[in-house]
Amino acid sequence: MYSAVLLGLGKQTGQIGGYNESAAAELFASETGLMLRSQFASVIIDTFMAGILIMQLLKYFPNQNKDLLSTKLIIAWSSVWTLVVSVFIQAHVSYLLIPNFGLWLSPWLEVRWIATMPIFDILAVLPIQCFFANRAYLLTERNNYLLGCVSLLLLASVGGAIGLTVVFGSQETSLIGIESSGAPLITWIATTFAADALIAASIIYGLFKSKTGWLQTHGFIPRWVRLSFEA
Image 1 (cartoon, rainbow, N blue to C red):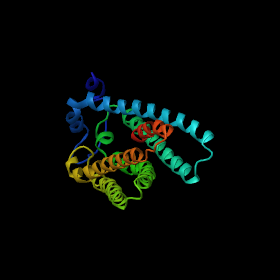
Image 2: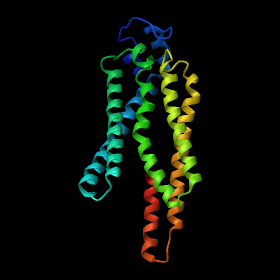
Image 3: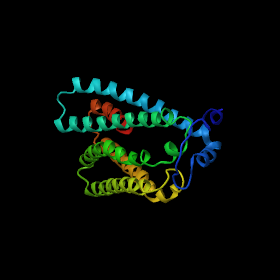
Image 4: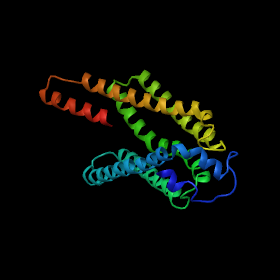
């Protein structure tokens, strides 16, 4: 159904990576449905999550006046960049399906859109990771080994994101020959996940270890652990 609607509706001249419009349409003919569903799903999920973020921000800033200014700045910075990513995704899908409707060569094979995503992700996520890394460091009695490991993982994730942007952005096409970006892609994703897992595990460990003889404190510990895990 998708291929019947989209293939052959547009006309485009020129080549990208040795492919012209006809070759690109033939290349993607069998994957049309999957590619379009993926794009629509990303818009729906991201819009839903952006709505949740906006609701949380509307609750947070009027009611948390006692938080440190640095905490508010971190939240504001990461929230702005997260919303920038949401707008970017909307703009990308609009670019694919409105001015380039029925075309495959330029919108699906060019690299300029996708190559910028790792940098956006780092700008949004890194301050939050550093904030929670500091909390984990304090909860584990200023464990320097933990701080060193987390710092190395975060530096590696930044390097992987920048490397992926450079390597992927230097390719002729976005989907053909993508295996050349495998090393920075794996580095970025793996180290980001490892840092998050280590930070969460350290916070949970520190919270359980901080239990006292007070029943009231014991009641709050599971809630803090759950919030740390969700974060």
